[in-house]
Length: 207
Image (cartoon, rainbow, N blue to C red; front, side, top):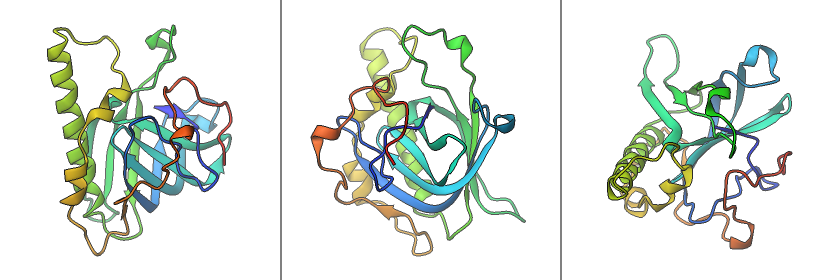
């Protein structure tokens, strides 16, 4: 996971090279732990989830302390689970590994636990696309590692960019009770603004 990824003024994440945004979902509540500099390390906020072929980005409606957005590479997510509690709203929970800066020891960075709560409307569009995309990204990554004959010690989040998503988007089930917006056309076509690495981001978000 990376904190405060670069954003456009409208709150949309600035894309990476070869990144394709699949959907945006407003009206979700997001929780994550072990955030440095925040009270108890636990963050809870309402906002919008953006899902692409590389990552999932939560953008808060209002800044939470010094944080506005949380970037979770799909290849770093594990233990994801769809929960349907009887007395509470449907949610997705899981863990996400931090994006470790180059030349930094991974032992200094802890695994985060997160939860996405669907408090406004259904989730019949978001949930299948999320799980199908995660499965496709992992399958592609396994093929790449087998082709290289050895697993990489640190998985590059941007390897997921090669995952084919066009067919997934075309055949996505649209739940009329789910306010998720599917991007049939990419909302940020200006390639000059695209990012090339997780490390070359500004210290402050562009919001």
